[in-house]
Length: 253
Picture 1 (cartoon, one colour):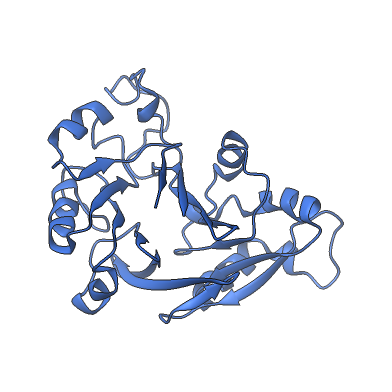
Picture 2: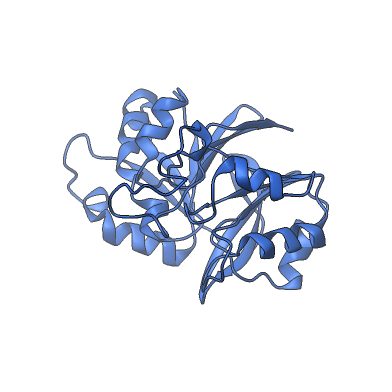
């Protein structure tokens, strides 16, 4: 399995215009964070988790020329807004794109991208096949996926476990029953928005505590606000087996 971090940032806490804070003025490429998403290569299949507003730019940057399916964690725009750009894959692959999400997520997508689901379709628009998922293991293009339900304030959001790799974003609370699904994973990716309290996201210290509870071999933090600080600053603060992810980072299992 090969995992590429397409983006590790968030719309949360990002200024409307550029500012002179340490992150915005940093020359370190690791501080240039597009909206959070990952690409996975598993057993010859190419999957993406979430298509945020930066989806097209991310896929072009990583030269990902084939895509077998998309999984959605939840319905917020910073995780769905780029879905229109799957049309290039429809054209190249000559097939509909399978998308996986809860009933609520799929209904939101059908509302926001209503033109995709019209009976009489405009030529060249994206073409999808929807797959409704629940909090039960499922197959995404033949790949086994275990959903992990977390709470993003009061909104249920799915993390996903693929073998020994678990990806959780936009979480503030995970109950013990769901954490049992995560235990034993070798690589854990977890959101860590900022240092100070936030209503719907783990803080840096909360994320570190959860990693300590789960005890993976290694953990990577994502969904990072510019308020967290620079990559160089935060990496020095982290325990030896925890890392700050960055856009374009690749890990293999």
